[in-house]
Image (cartoon, rainbow, N blue to C red):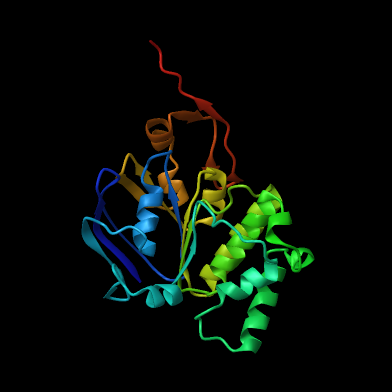
Length: 250
């Protein structure tokens, strides 16, 4: 169980509190500058909050040792790392350093993510010879290799074509159903509604609401927070929307 209690980040995030359980997919949504990345950075330990605590199974993980976080958290950051001129397989091997795996485990886990992320054709190719979207898939594969119980993904579908966006989101749901807690920052509200069990809506650093997609993606929230009107969105028939910008009049 994850318990976020009164987390604040100066000028970026007002007090935020919520709980989430293993097996869930939580979508973090909101417009640009809402505080989505700030919240996720606190959870992974790259930003220390001014106040509050983050409990995982009763343990306060703020300030936890790097090795503890390395085993607990799988993190896909918004901005991928700069790659060196090495092959995809070599980079994946580097990502397993200090995980305590045997050579057989390393081989098996790397073979698994190469299949899962559709990277087998590129296994022996230099990272620098891949397209931006292919590099993004490699980066996601590296980030998820450790199979942490807490999976944090900050706009993980950015730069991916539609097929691989769906592939990645399906993999994240699979991780959750296997027992992990998955938290994903997303801009695509259709994807958020399709793949997330609950959505946490933020705006200007404030925590607005957490609930099911039907509870959060209301006409009122979309108009007030996103400044759009929709003809139709999320109901028992499925997920669809036709948004229109609300244009301010002088």
